[in-house]
Length: 214
Length: 264
Image (tube, rainbow over all chains, first blue to last red):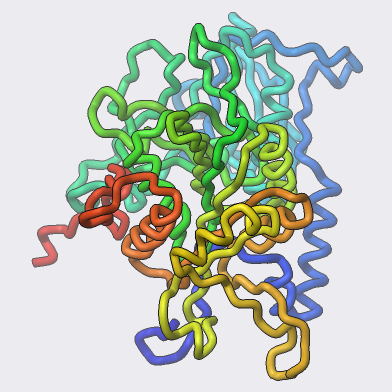
């Protein structure tokens, strides 16, 4: 594909590239780096550590009636500012993962600028769980995150609320986004969710991707 | 992998025995996927389930084929299955790219699902980079087909009647004559893998593909879906076949939002 200045560049295609094709264009150094990253990724799986497991208790599914997940720094900050406090909520779990963008650790003493993924429980009603996930969960880790977190929960009558943010520039609408009053809320819900939603539903052709979608 | 939709009282899993499975490859211009959108939207197909898979990037949105307020709020995800029993047609739509290193497991799981659900044949809609054509391919039709040996026996004659062109094989080592010819589908995503696996596993598969480039691929999708229709006759094509296909509401705003008035 030619650019405005006439030089020819290889445009990234929407097609799924064959790995053989990708490998041919790599230098030996690139290949070595890629192999090391892959080794590190697969060695360090996504680990969900619950506080009660430290004592060697049996892995019973957690009784959970409401699970609120805040994904991304903005949503995590919202929970920190308006919901969480050390009087009503206690830390009950942490996710440990590594990818090229961030690393989380098993410490629960975090700064707002850290990358972390923590679980809290409402002390007055221990079936209410909250998750603050400010770290980036890579696309090949999202499924694992999902299975390990939800695998620890008893899912009958569970209501899940996912909080997330997207840039206004990504919002597809007939008018220009410059004239839109932002920030604004949109929602997606499953048909099983019968309660009133507090904002309009997300219109076509907008979509949500990555961990919130998973 | 396949999870049927909860249909309330009727909880039996749908039966695809003897059906034709129509599906896209995620390929250059997303032409196969756009063509599948046209098929699902025009034939008003019913969603019967989805694939629960870790091989595709997750995504979710509201019903991409919504026609009114009432049907616009059903969630839709990255790999869903639609069916039209009256035409013995089952359609898989894929809406996101493969996660790194996951396209092979997906192909294996898909083909074993095809076998276990006893689909009669698979039709794969795909595309290939137009700039990789050789001199001869630059002339004439940009459409090609491929048939696995088992399907060749059944419908090879029909392709000849339709005057369709089979995808050419290319030299394994270009520039060196007297070399083996191999199948090469650049930009075709999983097309070649699915096709070669189907050949070796005795699955009846047809590949229909178009040479194209990235850009506005809606016209390419129409050309491909009309090509498919010449064979499968999904809609009546006597007058102007292109006008018979219904564009889904999710195709709005493919190239960005409206312009800010302050620009002028």
